[in-house]
Image (tube, rainbow, N blue to C red; front, side):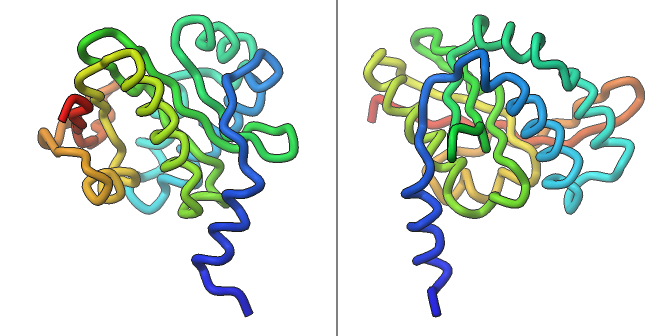
Length: 173
């Protein structure tokens, strides 16, 4: 019988972090949609998740266009995108725009691998601070991984209020 740690290590071995390519765009759209609609169900009601998911349509062309606006790393398994991290590497402050993992694969360290790869890239670029606005689903894990909370925010979109937490991580320490 394998322990949970053993299964995480096996899962990590099969995951490769690569730069996003146009062929990943459709998978990115699906990962985003499913992570919001299924993965965030424990923290947000249906109306909140629908509003959040509507932020970027499930359209591969829109996601491919985002690959030109941001640096995008993809967690790839068997040639398919199962998670991604999208970030803007401006100096001295970089912003993580999106970090999503397919819901059935959450908790296996894939998001951590994506963030670690983005952090390595940003350190090489001499970026001093990374920031992000995290969902209530992601917040607890960030605090355990050296991110500093800057507090909760309430974002209203079309009359729907979404809670999120702002974080930053210093890279120059």
